Length: 329
Image (tube, rainbow, N blue to C red; front, side, top):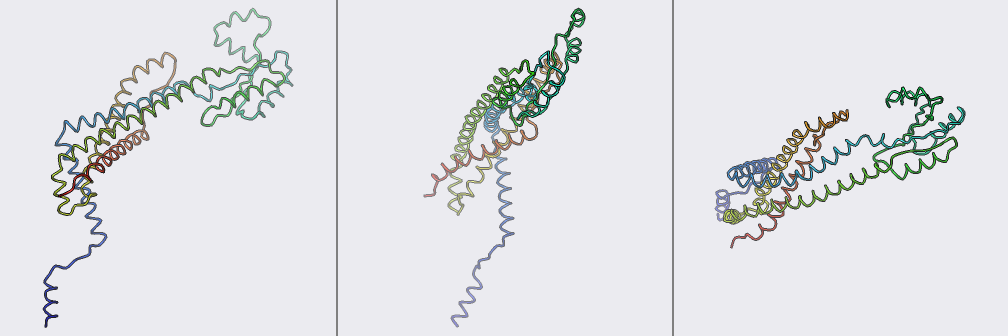
């Protein structure tokens, strides 16, 4: 009889129910969606603070990105590096056709040589008459003063190997029937040094300003935590876990980083459009078709990714540091 009453009490009482994975997953997604919406609404309710924070993040991201774009455009404006390393080989005036043919074969067998182009003395004279403007004066010369030349193009992969180019020049100079070898290596070395230094400066500036972004977002999240201190205590009293409490602040940091990156991309695009007119006038004076290049799709995605990572990272650091100090008593 007692057992029967006990069973009836058990049936009248609350019974636990195990939720399926699908129900838990739907609840998890719904909470993330609601948290994202509430975080966005919270930011809109404080427009001045949100605008100031996103502008600081945008400037911090735009500065190294601008420096990177300047270096990239200067590198491309300098011309094709592959053609800049072209080696000019002057043939001796007294060289016979057989010696010239043999010299061409030897040039092609040198390690590191990609292409060899022969320009005869007559061809060189015709080009000089057409391009120099002194064609009429050359009529008074009895002999052609220009030698035959070979234009040697070294193999170039990702970047120019100056040491390998010097080895090629030494090998060519040792060949018979070669009178002189010329290549302007000084400007090429300066260009490489300047570009390498610029990349290092852009990287260092990016790291420093990235740390600044982390500090800005971390301070913003810290102030948000302090302003919602009582709310956090109540949530923890009713059983809210640290991940549950942490989630809104992480979404706030993520949104701040993404908005800052978006504004930085708009600033870069606007600056590029502002400079493009002046740049077009400048390159037209040099009869060039060069145009300034912006971030592109890959650069824009990279900038947005960096903004999101910095925003999420700064929020995570701030929440991890300050949330554990807020516990119900």
